[in-house]
Length: 193
Image 1 (cartoon, rainbow, N blue to C red):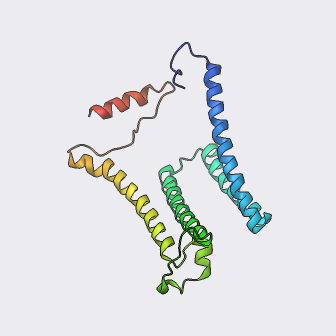
Image 2: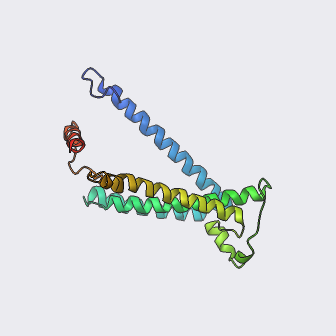
Image 3: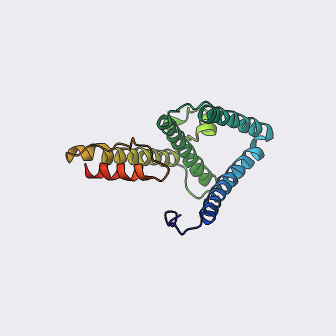
């Protein structure tokens, strides 16, 4: 990849590098999904995994048709924000589940929160919210870390440049050309201004 601009570099070598990168990332993601679905299949049965995978394929197909066939410009920024929020929720649930499993294995203690005993059982099953201090504190720490990283990034991109009398960060509006020149020249212009 580093030699892509070198006129002496082989096109076949560059393509081989891209294929290897794509195959590696596809294999890694596919392997992770298969392990994840296998765990669900063992816990809940095969049909629920089948219906979930079918639903995911339908939604992926809708996005593909809108994007590639219909040539619609999708709201990628909003989609990324929603995806980020969903990933934050998954992290919240995973941290609660891991703390609960460590408590079941007696690796860490359990300090019950008496005023949270009214919590229904499905809150633990679906959201890994358990009435004990260890899971609640761990989940609060995760939420603070995720929101804190967003706030710091927003501060550095918008508020800090304004305090220094500079323009806040804006994504480039110039689409790159086939050789990448428009992107490079526009990034130089934004750095100079």
